[in-house]
Length: 191
Image (cartoon, rainbow, N blue to C red; front, side, top):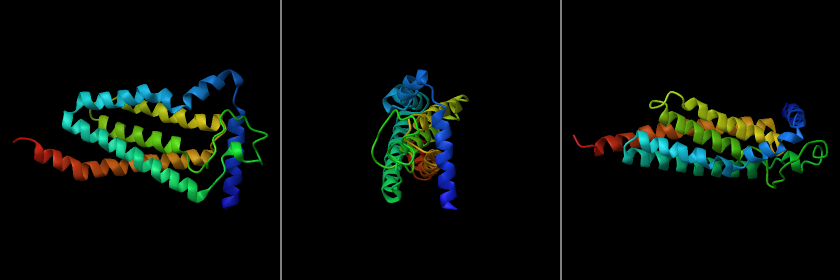
């Protein structure tokens, strides 16, 4: 069963990766770079600080940062435990795929997917009562994670599992925020 899933994953990856067109290589190489998205991160925090009192915005910001540390740590531990080669390092397929990046390390699951979906989901949950349009933020993780297939460094299952882990982690941290921080903030407000 696992072999069948791995074969399906490889075949879907090869198909999606082969859709790449040289004219778009610069675009996807830029999209896959984390620093490209710095203005969006800044916007996330500006919106939190505009719409919430300073103390609450500070705790929301800290919650997002702790979430990122948690997700990246969990991702790294999982990668080391599973030890799945990235497509660009897999000799069975790396001669037939387009490779625009060549990171070492392991593939399962995608840190780009887990971190981008965790950040976006938590910020979405914090901001949705204040802005109706925040669901548009999901364009970022969708582009960001697809770019990992395009540049040849992640299989689709790496992306799907990473997105799931990131999203579920964000819901967990949102629940923890409301369980432990919201009551603290309420108790510090003057009557």
